[in-house]
Image 1 (cartoon, one colour):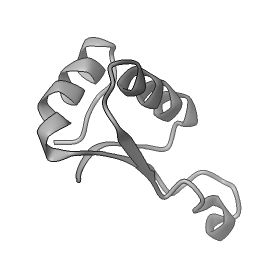
Image 2 (cartoon, rainbow, N blue to C red):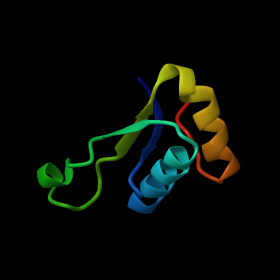
Image 3 (tube, rainbow, N blue to C red):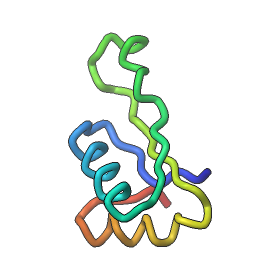
Length: 71
């Protein structure tokens, strides 16, 4: 698994997941439940992971839709 996206914005995170699922790319969210540790203030970013073989296509999909991806 490779990191595709890291963001504090829940709307961007949900949008990225929906885009990838719509294209048939499986994604795995990490750090989604960290708000319990941080007190729900949103300072810890969520990470979106994809399989290595889907990384290039997933980056292109998110970039084409205006989202910045992790390097």
